[in-house]
Length: 251
Image (cartoon, rainbow, N blue to C red; front, side, top):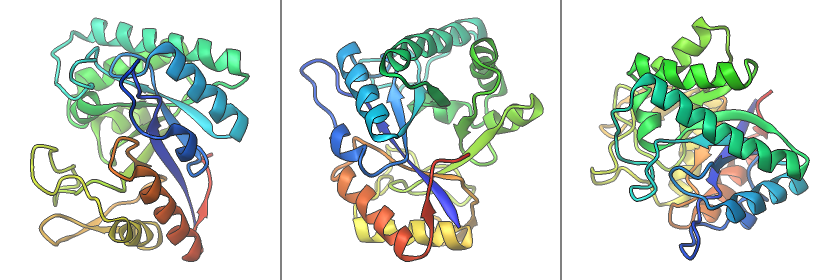
């Protein structure tokens, strides 16, 4: 049994500090690095990429709507051409940072509202994939199991990587509980670790109403902006290892 452990990093912006990227990079195997549209100033992004390269952590581009004020969590009705251009722009920016650090973009993951939008919106999912087609036809893309994004990726011959969220509650249909709802973000490290061991070893998670979800995932995400994010990530990694699960970047 093996699974990837990823986290959203590089999200500080100027005087606004968010998360402990240095510590998190010693725990995870993949880093979803902000590309400047929802968070991440150039110096923060560069430092994050340099440290990831030094530690051998794989870098992924976390692309989003152009929404710094809303941290990329507000839905935007962009045309397909606009969205594809925005995503391609972000990929180009992070690619420059990666090249300078001696690493490369290894995968792509939408962020926030864009991530949730492409669960069902085939037009916007297609626009994200159009940008990837123009940038690198071989890049894998992370997304929610059963999403339009991963379905379209498969139709186009691109690898889609299914992920689960360690610190988020799930609806019975496999979607995430909205952050506007109480209990959407899980905070207890021990409970989170127990849930992720169940996911990795049985392929099941408990939904918010108590039902059992069948949810196969190749990667587990811990949000870098969650309270005690590093502690949660360490608890998850330790529990997985003790359960005989190997923590490795997805191939």
